Length: 168
Image (cartoon, rainbow, N blue to C red; front, top):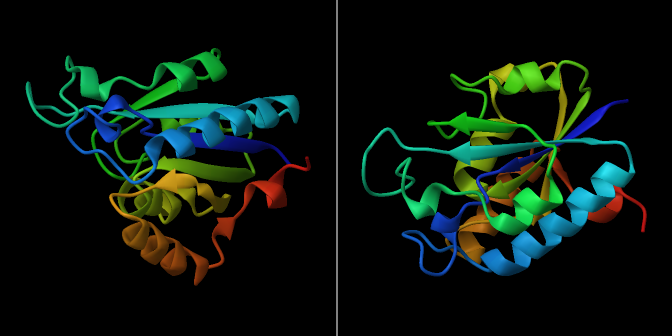
């Protein structure tokens, strides 16, 4: 089975100093960096997603510092393709699916749990894939919002943990 780790929107906008700082973004980023190394060592593919707004200013403005993927993520996934999106669903009007041609299992992590992570995990474009969201590798505006989104995904059997997916 071929797996792909999809890292959604780990961008400056969600960290202190950005326009929409999330709950524990630094801790989540550090865990994602660690898992990227584990995924690559296991032969899994890695694909990064970057949200870019059509607007010239504000949240995720294309030329703004907030839309930039975090340097630690880019350093951990140096050879990973970067998919640019403008909608919550990372499949919607992007070339994401072209990077998943040999993928059987899509492992999703990133930001924001209740928005881009959920919409991508439930996308009809992913119907032919086994999709799982890695709970401890996601963040939302608050812990409560994060947990509500995970509970909803869990009711669909779409939640996994790092230890479920990669042995230590």
